[in-house]
Length: 124
Image (cartoon, rainbow, N blue to C red; front, side, top):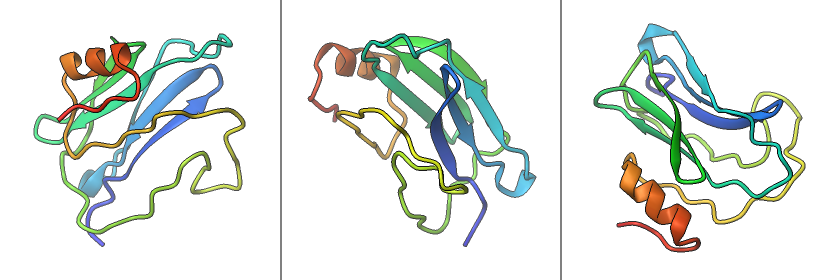
């Protein structure tokens, strides 16, 4: 199956958590945003650049928190994409999601700002 370089984005308490599996190092890294559960729609973007292991969470088009993953190894086998449910427990997200987009590259800060200011559009 290859290294365990899975990733996940979750609402944990009042913040967004973004985690990257540790690959062959076995050390998972999670970064956590500022509070987001204020009753308003929020634009949330999480990015990971495997080449330099940089992790970012953007809130409403602006950088919020960064980190460095323990591994930059790519996942070598496909895993199912699970949305709004914890893959390791029978827990579900109780809320609304809109305009979910997944890219095959890490978005730049300019890309994130564009998406925030142009809802529903995509970047190339």
